[in-house]
Length: 399
Image (tube, rainbow, N blue to C red; front, side):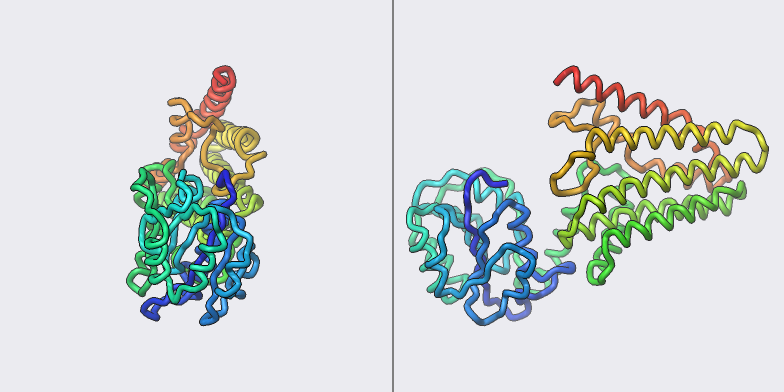
């Protein structure tokens, strides 16, 4: 959230005619997506300068943004820092936060690109009059450059894309999809699963399917896959492992849809987290039962119990420590630690919590040896739980 009051003004652009404010970008009209980015960046005073050529009120329903006729802009009470943004510029929230916080002298504008400007002024009404009189975005930014001092180039991590034609629209969609890849993802997840899930998500966001519905589909696929491990036949186990992998891939789609459509919810995050753990538990139990059916000894059941209980204890502890009181935007589960400076042990634990192990399940299942994975999980799950407890204690002592 910005540390000061900032007014954001979105000016409708007259481009090639290929892209309008209601052009859908991955499930959301372009203008609405820009407003949602501004809201996500912490802006609360958001105005859309509607010159009457396009009705914007419907696109803004459910947001705090206000559509104002250009002639009424000067009468709006604004802050001294005003962000001016053309409607063909799709920014990243970090860019807007940066533009709201950078120090600027009075009557100075910082414009990292044509179509984006942060202006510090002692006379907001005069600036709003300039915006209201402008014929289009291009002439407006030319006037801003003439009227206000330009700030020197500042170090930043600015990110944005221009969306003026169909080619740029495709690039913008690819840019948005790439932004969904988390830094904490495992190697196989980043290079295999995400490529597939993003391709699926790109199509699903054009439909009415919700993130929670996608979670339910993913969990159902995983549970069905677990049932195939009741057999010791390699063919059945391989089908089960591939469905388990498909569950992992589809499990990425629910969060991707939620983030693209700005419909994240705490309930959805909890459903996703515990749904994953339910699938893992079902896989452990079914592998154990399938092994027990073959030799009728107690060992498979004990191993299944160890893997399941160890996994659920770890999940419960992670939920209690990092998720129970989390209210920030974004994925509910991102790390096993709440420390702002995670230790090497925390990074190791995060790596162990990722799901690259599923590829080991696929390889072993192809030879009918899924029970080897159960043995590893039965030993590893309690050790991981102990490791998580120790790391939490260690961080608490160092705090």
